[in-house]
Image 1: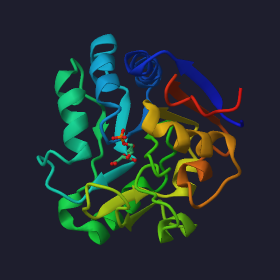
Image 2: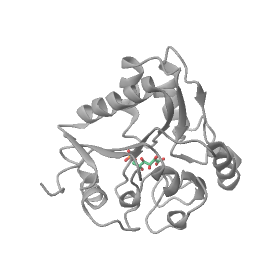
Image 3: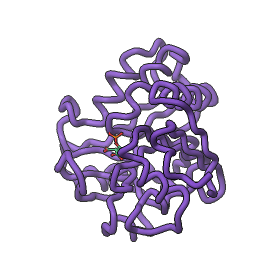
Length: 227
Ligand code: 6PG
């Protein structure tokens, strides 16, 4: 395993561990990319309390669903409600993906916004199919070598167009952290962390090239990892 593994008891412990890393990253300042989906919500709530000053941080998103920013499927909305609205000091920059423009336009705009930015910290989920951000199994986005963000099609619900950071953009980050909990993630976590890199499991292709990659898993999600 080329990834630093942090295995904790249950989902609340995993959220706490992720919140601890987020707090450190927010304090250090720089560019942080956050994940969507349902798993990170608790971590965002916890870090809003433990580190309410994000004034040194720029917030980005690893991916977005092409919906209005107020839609309940929006990853921006998730972060706004669980984190941004609860802070005492707002981030220095909030760089949301404007999914409502449509995937191609939103991806082009986000690609331009990311030019010249090195991400200091990226939080990523792992889907039950092994996707991460909106990099789905065997999809064309996995072959992107130049762009930092592209349009993508969903492989799992919600079935709306996506915008996603690309593998080169994620690989350039100084610290990548995967967060996954629950037994429905166990197989994908094992393929991501303990198998050969494989486009059938996009998360297995995502590593920091010159920095650190870590994974926070609860016991259920870690159940199929070799020990
Ligand atoms: C998204 C996410 C996505 C997520 C995984 C895991 O917008 O869907 O950013 O990559 O991290 O799908 O999601 P859950 O935590 O909901 O299982």
